[in-house]
Length: 254
Image (cartoon, rainbow, N blue to C red):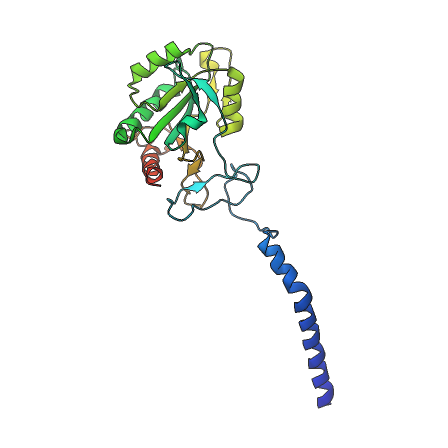
């Protein structure tokens, strides 16, 4: 009986050995080629791709996944700014900057957004060579370079890397809705125009960056409407200008 038991153990050991020889190399090969996927906790507003953590020597701000499996980057663009100069996405490389969509005759959120942007501009006045703002008008038929220049002077735009841009309407709306996922829609009159009141934060390499929320999901965009002085709006939503300033400072150090 003891011999029979020993033979059973030998048989089991032989089967395990064969399994290891055949299948373990295959499993290792799949892992090395990243062919094994798993579910991750993520924001509903982003791609199903796993959130990429910052690389060594970078801040704790994360990258935002894109639909193509990479990290969400500023699309190529080319528009005319308030000084009549052609500005492209490449003009911002090497700089940390904010992106907004607005129009000069906006009677509601745009004045509040640009007030906050001027406060941020003044906060980082010593970094104007490394910090900028990209403001895209969604009413290009009205907002000519001359109109944008007057608007910039009215609000106190002094940073040489703050470009208020105009150009082809279709390209601007595509940039907003497909490039940045910042909602923009055209109405019949100025009061009917709709657009996001959020700011996108871009790093020196042109990637959209964000801090993580308490739920370990990316914030993605920063509320640009509520000022630091207000603290919270009528619905109790807290301002995000303070944390935006903190995150700009982090990216400037990268």
